[in-house]
Length: 125
Image 1 (tube, one colour):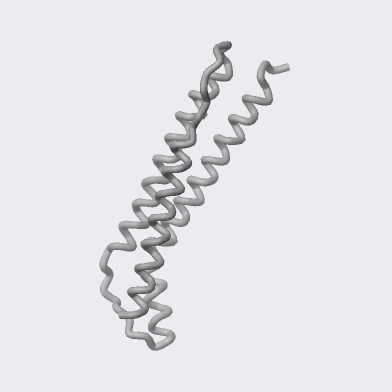
Image 2 (cartoon, rainbow, N blue to C red):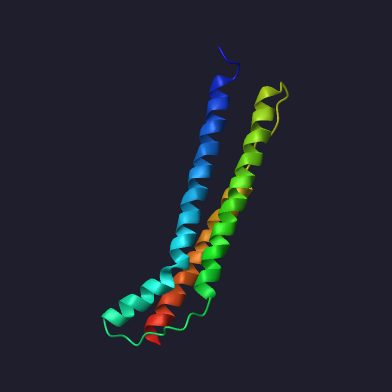
């Protein structure tokens, strides 16, 4: 039997969860990057005044989300390796990692608010 198997398995499940989240975030960033094209098509279909000139703001937000997702994968890998080392050692150590999750949640809240304001302003003007 593998020593500390349940702890090692929990660490691996957490790592894979972070990787899945970062892949989803990367896909969401790609969708956001293409979102302005979608808005132009929809606005022309419902006969709204469409601003076909791209401002580049949405593309920058999408690229930023993709970049953050890559950083998230790197941070998840570093955390996994550090936790694996702590589990294998005999010393008792603090394993608190709340900061990373809070920062990612804050980033997603800011991006979501920005998109709501952008779409609202785009539809009004």
